[in-house]
Length: 348
Image 1: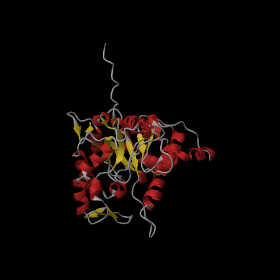
Image 2: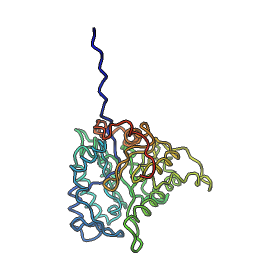
Image 3: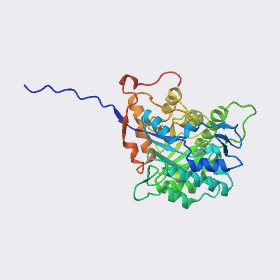
């Protein structure tokens, strides 16, 4: 009598998630920030910026091994890290900006293969040749986990809050498009904080307003017509700007179809807000971005298919054909119980 086939063991591995929005400060950048006497600078682990209150950075948040372990526990196989644009590095006088940008790029390129890095440029007279070199394919393997160079370029939302801003940085967009690399729009420095403002004021009020303005400036400037192949992602669901498209149409705006190459990430939002974003844009342009170490990556959203799209499929489409190969690896499912792969309910 032939043996009865035994059921296969359940597969406890899932495709690795791609987190397109994290921050990790490498040693060269920390050294240069500690050597400065004007904002932005570090005294020990206390960060001083031009307008926000001093912030006590947790050293453990920038420990490379600890970050990799935390990511793997969350099912993340690739973390795309960027220079923290609220520092205001891009808008410093050119000599100061160049020094800090070089420290960022050198340190980011030396990170292990779990990480990919976003390049950054000075806001005034950006070095387009240097950016093109950083985004160009690099023969002979990866640098800092990025096959072919840096994964894309980050721009501060403060530089893009008016239609003229997108026009002014059109050459930077053209370099990214020519390299087939995306652009990350991230909150920039705040102009000033109210007296006695709580620590959450800038992230909740200023940062979201910057992203909201950058989203609408993109549409007002007609950027897509000039850069038809460019992929762009705005952090923090673009400050929930997509939820205002009904008001835009009601006040005289031209209804436009969803732009499949204009993405938003999930950072700092939960099921209620992201469900509304999906209703406005569909699920295909929503990508996992955690803003780690300041928030945790989204684990589940609207069922297994949507979760897979947001954590795996959509980020790889954003990053494009030059995406780091590490993102294709499977990692242990941090929660193998299928009952838990369901939409979250209630506040995050």
